[in-house]
Length: 144
Figure (tube, helix red, strand yellow):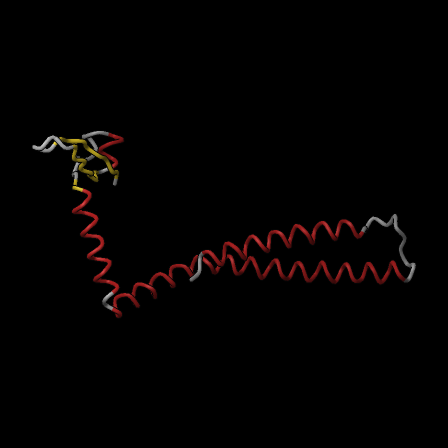
């Protein structure tokens, strides 16, 4: 829907603005695609508010809507939760590798110039932690 205002003059000469909603396909693509189907905005808005009030006053209907929304959102959250679990496993693996590296370094088994350098593990760990935080945020936004 697309909203539009129309300025008119009343009999007394005062400016009257009437707003309308009409099909956006009609506005963008013309009459070949759709009719105008304009509706006065005050009528449409009043109808929507009345319908919302009716839904809110019917607890069963409101509960059904919330359950339906939660189901659809949980379906979209499930893949994110799987990704979070995979990232958590990778982080644990990296932490174990860092601990082993430190143990070998402290026992002088490996030196500073070893190809398996602690900075590589740290950088990988930081990237995974950042990715993990981003996925957690996306997961929270999709779930009630």
